[in-house]
Length: 110
Length: 113
Image (cartoon, rainbow over all chains, first blue to last red; front, side):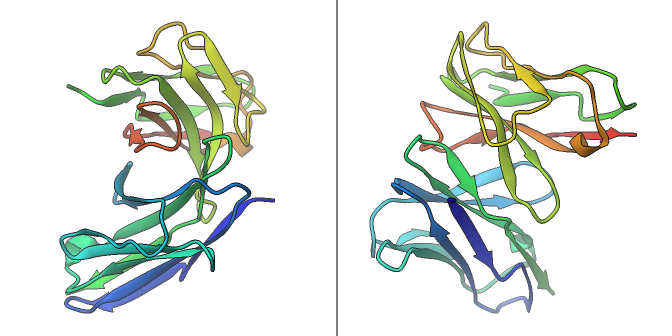
């Protein structure tokens, strides 16, 4: 059965720290991996990764995919309280459907 | 450009009642989907549609029906509500499939007593 596992489930850090969130997957016929940020309401798109070793970057956030070891990481540097959210990872399968991880709840303390 | 809209925001139902959750998008997206989100379980796909007149089941379709008569609208019907359907429901749309960036509606929090 296809699955996506995120770790840790929750994380509390102080403002200014750097965090690394993990997403591992076992999905038949992997097509791509997506990261979303979910604050109070709907998830919003962060990155889509399709190729190994190519870092995607947006401001203080970056992400990379390892298709050999079947995982991705999401890095956030110099964290701010506005980064507090649930970060969701999803993998696109052979039917172009998304398989979602349970999310990592990140809390940034001032 | 409103994006994806959902109504209602909150709903309380009694077991056995039926209702329809509304979803509309104004981005001319072909692909629309319904998810439910439960604590600790991530998002689970209920039904999806790749275009007007075409729908298909996702991971957890039992107890739900959908139709797609227009590109813009994708309502989700609960046939006979059960407490296990208490959840937050999100509608999403994208350009062509799940492989593209999904735009989510604000969600509907449903409680079934």
